[in-house]
Amino acid sequence: MVSIDAKNLGYTEMNRLIREAEPVCTVENCCGQRFLAAGMSDKDITVHGIPGNALGAYLNGGSITVDGTPIHDIRR
Image 1 (spheres, rainbow, N blue to C red):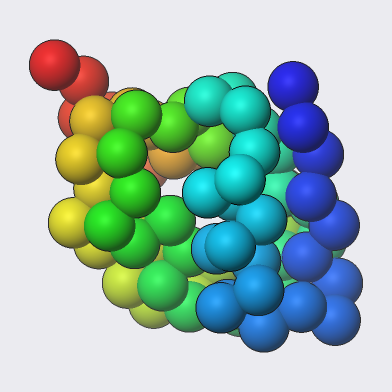
Image 2 (cartoon, rainbow, N blue to C red; image 1 turned 60 degrees about the horizontal axis):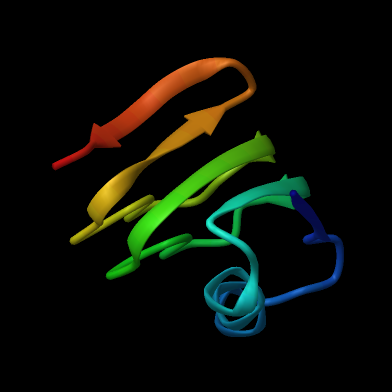
């Protein structure tokens, strides 16, 4: 599992790192970055912190959990 430190990262860079990561990854220190995991496919992402708007917009398979609370769980 890959851990991505979102501190000082914009959403574009963070989404690039998530796309390049393994299917299961964790985002640490999230602080309002929007569009997190938007349009991604088949990723299981755990977010620690506070994501911005449009979290998981157009998520195509996979799940997003924010600090232990499942937000999106779209599995085929």
